[in-house]
Length: 199
Length: 242
Image (cartoon, rainbow over all chains, first blue to last red):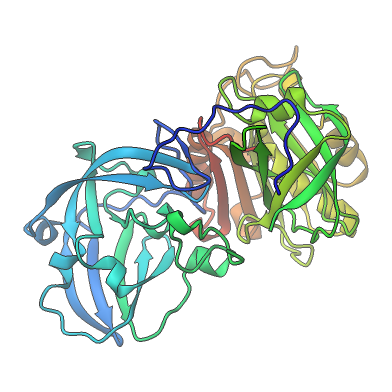
C-alpha cells in the first residue's frame, strides 16, 4: 500500500499505452554515461563479431556502409525513468550482420570503445529487434549519444543499447556486463520494470 | 522493495535547493556516491519516481540526507523542495549504483569535480572520508554560478581548515570581489592549477549537467588523466536528478 504524499498531485496519468510502468515522457535526450565520451576516428573504427576467440566478421567504416541500412522509428526507455517516443534512426540490423553465421551461441556480450560492456540473450538481437545505428534524426550520431555508431535494442532499457559499439562476442553462457555487475537487472525489460537486481 | 522514510529535518542550502533528512527503518547503509529512488503518490493513486543522490555519509542509523535542487518545470523537485514538511513520510528504494562510488578502503588521491548541484554525491564522499578517518588526499574543484549558489559552504570551509580538504571554487557568472579568476567556464589553466597532476594516479569523479561533464572530462584527459580513471555522473535538463 503506497503512502499518499500529502499535497502531491503530480501531472496525472498520461493514459499512454506506450509508456512502461514507472516512466515519464521527455522530449529532449538526456545523456547518461559512466565515464568520459570516447572520440573514435572513423578511419580507426571497426566492428567485429567474435566467437571462441576467433573473429568471424569484421567491418571497417567503409565496408560497414556497404551493408543494407534501414531507417526505423523507436521508443526509448531509460532506467532513470525517462522515455522518449518516436525517435528516428538509421542503421544496419543485427539480422543482416549475423546472416550466414553458423552458431549455437545462446548469448551475446556487446563491447564498446571505452571499455563498456552489456549482455543479452542472442534472440534479443535477432528478428528485427536490434540495429547498429549511425544516424539519429537524419544526422550523424553525436559522440555523447554513442557516435560514430551504437547498438539500439529499444525493447530493453537503454543501457543495453551500448554506445560507441566496437563488437559483439557470441557466448555459450550468459556473462553479466558493466551495469549488470553493478546492481542493474540482467535482462532489463521496461514493461516488467526490471530495473535492479532485486526486480 | 520500497522503504518508508520519515522527514526529520529540512535545511535550505540555497534559494532553490533544500536538504531533506530522512529516517528510514531497516535501511541498508549506502556507499558514498550512491542514489535513491523517491516515490510520491497522489490521492488518486498516480505516482511519480525520481532519483536523487545521497548527500550524507554512510551510517548504520538509517539516516539519509538528500539535497534536492528545484527545477522550474519539475514534477517532483518543487514538491520535495517546497511542500514537504517535517513528519511527512516518503517512499524510497535503494541505495542504488555501484560505479560512481568512493569506498573507504580507497587510499589513492581523489579528485572531485562538481558542476552546480553535482556536488551532492561528491559531498557524501567527502563526509564519508571524514567519518572513516581516511587519510586519502581529496581535492574538490567546484564550479558554480555564484557564491550564493554554493551548497554546504560553511561545512566545506571547516573541512578545508580541519580535515585537509583542498577546495577551489570556480564561478561561472558572478565571482566575489577581488576573486583572482574572472567568472567563466572551467578551462585548461584551472584544471592544471586546481586538480591533482595525473602522475599521482588519482581517481577522478565528475558530476554535473551533461555539458559540464563533457568539458571537465575532456580537460582531464587532455591534461594526462587516463579515461578509465575518470568516473562520471551526468544529469540532463529533464533528468530531474539531484
